[in-house]
Length: 432
Image (cartoon, rainbow, N blue to C red; front, side):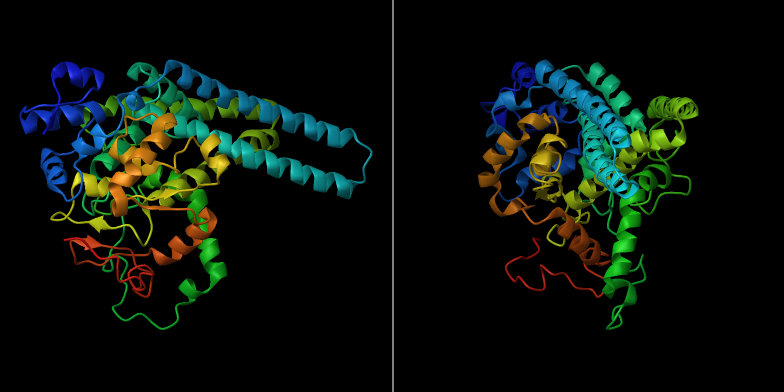
């Protein structure tokens, strides 16, 4: 039986001895989670088929769990430097086009190419900075939790996300991921909640017309993140009206957390005032070009990333009897998100997300190595795909509409009650 002495717990070194199992569980989750999952779910996970969490942890070198001042500082400065570099290139490029002797049509085309390129790459850089704030929320970026919170607060506030409010609900998402009753984000709606008939019509205009699907998808991608933060859309449906990440008294937060939620609100308000001052000086068009549209891109990329991490016909969701922490953590999909751009600009946030749910204290710059080690151990429990993320976005938006009201383990279905994986692959079965 794996166990941890107090000294070994402090430095992350694991040994084999005969200490009490409860001691192991408590030490393990205190090490890896700011707010650990319930002890019952931990015990269930350890009894589940396959390797336990403790055994999975023992396969990983201790060095993979250590944050680096050098790595963190260099990456943060690199991202901030790219923001300045891309803005400068866009400014100089636009000035060059204006001064060059071209006809108006040619200038319009060149400007369109310039600004579309800028919005694409600056949007990715901004999103990468948001991801660094996410890492700070887990306390895995800098070796200092205090500095993590300071940097995370600044990164998220600059991108209109209330840092501490999001951090608290995101920790709950990690504790209860895959649970139909307790997960916090992208919680599947049931057949009865969406009033899906048992025998849907043979043809559904909104389901079968691609242009309608694309329009609905665009709305989701642009408004998904702010709608979640402000209105709790895509969150649990059983929460009272007024539930919002901006409301310190929302049921999402404990009384002890209200102060930090208020600080997050003040930060966003101050950011809004700073943008107002800059807009008054430089003009709304300039601010929108250099800052506003990349911020909209952040909303899109974050929504798309999180949606595809947790929404797929292949991924199970669990109700009370079947859920445990390990199985919930494994109910996520690793994706080759934008290839090298996703790895460089987005810091592996989608390429190696499964290991992040199992061990969120691993810094993102070690997740690739950790994933390579555990893939062989997890075997069929590990989900990944190299399918185009834009094709996956369209397909999953269509195929992941609801789950059934009954069943301890459920999978997404489309509006017609079909699951493309379960309906075509008899080898994929639900575990009981």
